[in-house]
Image (cartoon, rainbow, N blue to C red; front, side, top):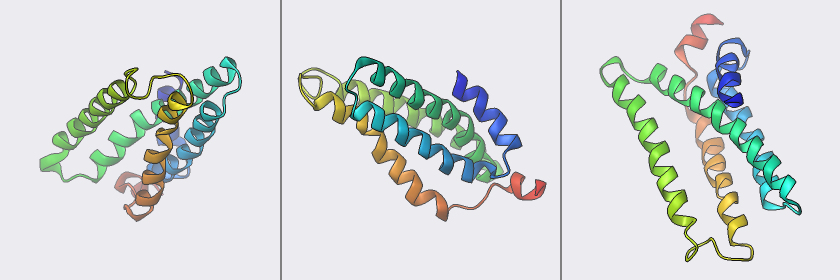
Length: 141
C-alpha cells in the first residue's frame, strides 16, 4: 500500500520520468532482497519483506502506466491486461516453488527463493535502458 501510494506520486512529480523511476526503484528491491538473503534475525527478514513490498507497490503503479503510454491505441487494453496476467503467473510460480518438497525445506532453500527477485530486477535493469522514454513525460519536459 505504501509503495503504491508513493508510485503515483513518483510517476507525476519525479524529474526522472517513469522509465528512470522504475530503474531507480530496482535499487530498492536490491536492498530488500539482500536483507532477506542474509537475514540473521527474523526482524531482518520482516524489514526485507517490507522493502520489497514498497518496490512491488511502486512497480504495480509505474509499469502498467509506462507500458500503456508506449503501446499503440489499438492494443493498449491488451497490454494492460497482460501486465496483470504476468503478475498472476508470477504469484503462481512463487507458490509452486515454495512447496515444501521443492524449495521450502530447512536450510538455505528459502533464502534462494526470496533472492529470485534479484533475477527479475537484473533483467529489468538490463532491458529498460533500451526502451524509449514515456511520451507523456517527454511532452511535459
